[in-house]
Image: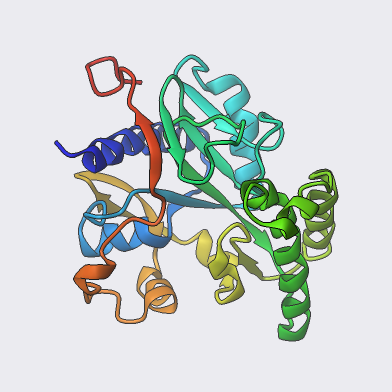
Length: 264
């Protein structure tokens, strides 16, 4: 078994645990981005993909984070947010397996939890008007640059300057902007670069069906075809061979005992 396949199977364990918690507590989630594409085109992981993404409306995301405080077996799992890990620099959560390592290249110096993970993207309300959304997006993008600056601070001077700004400033700025959009019918995954291109109706994120992924059923948007076309165009056509590679290369991976019979 290749290292990539081992990583995918470890990530699948995290998805199974997330699915269990969400079904138990009536929380809506769905596969998104390349994971959704994999479910539709490959009935599982895209063979060369090295990550797994799910999304939730913001209220569901907040509820999930709160439930995990009591629901999670902390010896096996860790829900990483800015509240649970002081070194976490993302406006979305990473759901990790304890006692494992998946250290991304150029992040070896970061002090955050480095366990094998999947990404959980909250879908934040965003402005309905295009002009306001463009202004909103520019501010959010700058805030994200400040939040992520410690990653690049070791190599680029501008990031060293940004990294001096306390993370609570860009985080509170984003929270304030989002709070002004509570009545909007549109949402977007601000943690992804694609949020600049794709806004979604919040109602579409509640209209879910089950789709096959690695021989099991998980939730996907009912309008997955339109969503995937907005992301990838003609998504059923495979990319050229030279582009069939993961986007998150790891400098170090340690599976611990999770693939040796001691599964979470």
